[in-house]
Image (cartoon, rainbow, N blue to C red; front, side, top):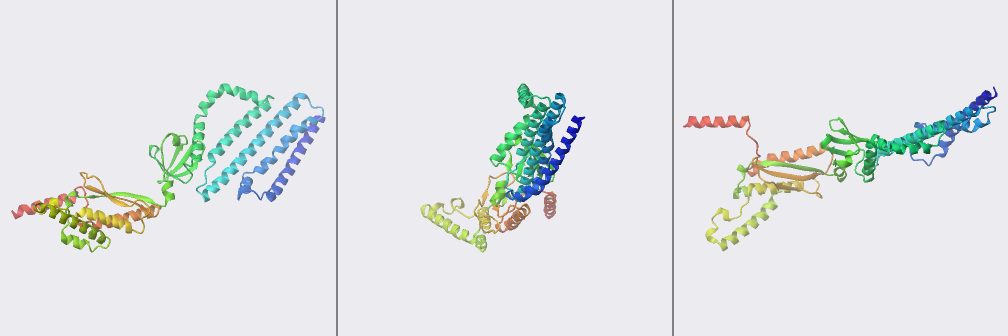
Length: 408
């Protein structure tokens, strides 16, 4: 009877002390915690960290006070003490997990306001995993009244099994450390990994997986370890540079490539962007041809022996001048029009430039306006864009054949 009364008194004392501790923590700590980072205390309150700290008190009271209960058998004493120790360990583990969750919440808030902040989610998840493992081992040791070291020594024989079970976790954690330590990937980065169909923004970096929201709003989940064992493209450099590359070609019909006549050169010299080029190039070609005529007057009448302006070369010069004058293109980055190797589909004239914005919609607008203008001005140089015959071309050819047959 005295033992039961003693245990009841101990229980009442434990929970009264828990209530007092919680009041103190919830009222005093917020007033003296001005040194915490912005939002840090609120995160601790949201995760009920202080309440969980107060929950440690009852088990501690039982753990110490059970020895003061009179007429309690040694068996019951050991059972209550061991259970109290296990509850204390569990309560401490819950506090650690709550603190880790609060850290993750604070990190998530920082990521939303400062994208360059590194994600701590994988570290938090690993910390929780280690906490669960330690708490489980210590609790089992306390309940069976054995040292946790004995249980840990038994785990050595199971190391091979543990390595197999936690293989992906170990590999992913190592990969996560390398990714964040070397600043290879952050939440918010544009990641492209064609072998897994990922092309979008990183929305979450966890211990085992990285979650990608593709541009079609589908979600691709990639094991973290694959990001270290396989290659991927991070477009963050493009975003930080402030310039997005244009790399597109116009296919010039080879049948329209020819020399320019003097009349055409005069007409093209009225184009402001082209006038400096034509003046310098005409002078250069004139000097060369005059020098050649003096050295070999009998061969100066052959066109193949003289230099002349071509329509495609002049068009290329115009494109370069147009790119340099374009207000929405970066002048401090590569900017050129280059002629590629001729193919069966014509001669590609490739535009290589960087826009002054990385926003997708604006980028496409600049690129579209640029090629609209170049395609429309091609006929001014006597050039045509190559395209495969269409139904309209076939009808036009048949009609011309019919007209020719009737005229005969």
